[in-house]
Length: 274
Image (cartoon, rainbow, N blue to C red):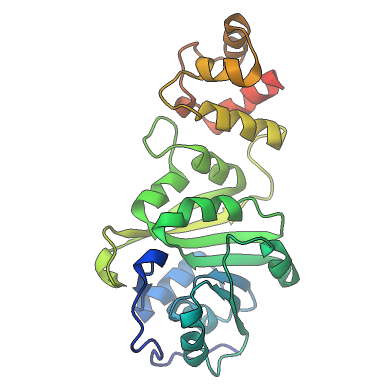
C-alpha cells in the first residue's frame, strides 16, 4: 500500500549534532521530486543511510518503496519510530554503515537501491564502501555537498578528479540531477548540496582485471605532483626505461601525470603492466 502524505511529526527538542554532520532537509515537495528523479517507486527495496528525522524515509514510502533505514545516532531512533508510525514496509535499525557486517545486514534485501543524505566529513569513505559492495545493488541516490558531488563525476585533469571518480565511472553512470541551496537545510551547511543518481552498470565500461586496474589507479594518484612515470617505477619495481616503454606502448607521453588519464587509458596501461 502506498503511504499517504501527512504532516511532519517528531524531532521537537532535538538538536542536530555537528560531530555527525547532521543537516536535515524537510521540504516535502522537494523530497518527492528527488525520489521521482531517482526513479524509485512501488515495490523497490531501498537501504537508507542516516534517515535523521525521517523526511526522506517518508518520501520513499509515499512513492511505494520498502525501506530499511539505518541510523547511527541512537537519540534519533525513538524520533523515527514516532515519525514513521503507521507506515507499512519500513524497518528502522541502529547502526553505522562503516562498521563490519554491513553485507550480512543487507543480503536479505535481494536486489536493492541506496538512498542517503550523507554527512560531508565522511562522504568519500562511505562512497568507497558502497561502490565496493558485493551485493545486487541497482542504484545509489545520494545528497552530498557540491564539492563531494564533483569528486563523484569529475573528469581527467580537473581538480576534483581522483580514484573515487574513476571507481564511480567504473561501477556506475553518475549524474548530478539537482543543486540544493544550503538554506533548504536545518541547520544550513556552509555550502550548497547536490543530489546525485548513480545507476549501477550491468558491466564495467572497460575490460581488464579489476584488482590490477585499481592498483594502478592508486599508484597514479599516490603523489599527484609527481609524473606517472615516477610513481610507476617504485610501485612496480621498474627501471626508468621499462616504465617509459610501458607508457609509450599505451600511447601516453613520458611526462603525463596520473590525474590526466581516463578510465580507458588506465585500463590499457594496466593490461600492459599486468
